[in-house]
Length: 290
Ligand SMILES: Nc1ncnc2c1ncn2[C@@H]1O[C@H](COP(=O)(O)OP(=O)(O)OP(=O)(O)O)[C@@H](O)[C@H]1O
Image (cartoon, rainbow, N blue to C red; front, top):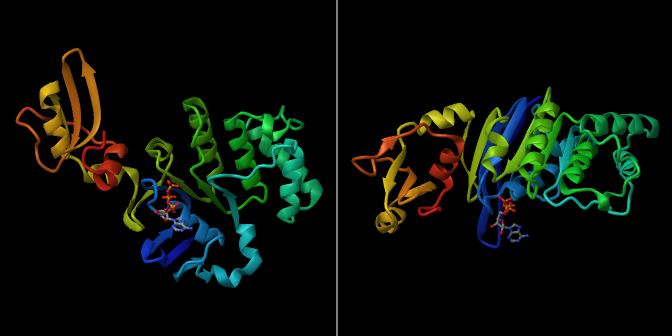
């Protein structure tokens, strides 16, 4: 399966929030990285049909999704940024309800819901009210509802927002598990969400596609541009003014800065191996990020 975004643009009043976005996606996990307001949710909402683009088309296997009509819905599973869960529903009832909306026959739907709840380690909450679940459990119910129809395309908008580190890792592993034979679009501004599991990263900035490549290539491309410099309190303001600083480590009176810069920021600066967070800051960070 292949998804093609062809020159998608969207503007509110006179401001473009997506500007001629084009990309080709094949099987695997695509991490859509961008700062707040970069246009990630707008892109996903246009894809799932919640929003209309001003220009451009989207194709699945060369077929314009406008021509697929309601058949398109069978291709996608969607976990929105702010899912509207019915808090008084019990988990299994909620999933039965979602099966009905997705036209999945009742018995088949219940079987599938139970299988998925087993996979996400929620076999004990069939009869618990959604409102009584923790945030992490609720998101796992969210991915279960997205997976009910065995979709070929899984769309996840900021799925780990608000989760603690343990739940975030658990959720990340689930995404990885569910990505087999699928295209997964995962929008986030949390770099670690995609660092270990994305096959490709799409970097969006102010509605523009800045980069699309594998994490390894993106990291290799900024090799030689990440530095550590030891400094003192008195010099720190000067560094802030001049550079993108991705980390500050204080050790007694010494301060170790991680600086992203095309040029060597100091004679004593040491080159260090970049990571995906550095890549994100290199392309999306303002100066003085810390
Ligand atoms: N209905 C609207 N009217 C006007 N502007 C809007 C509307 N919806 C979104 N925007 C603007 O479009 C831009 C992109 O928003 P979008 O929600 O797609 O960004 P995002 O990358 O998903 O951000 P976040 O990570 O904060 O969710 C933002 O500047 C936002 O303020």
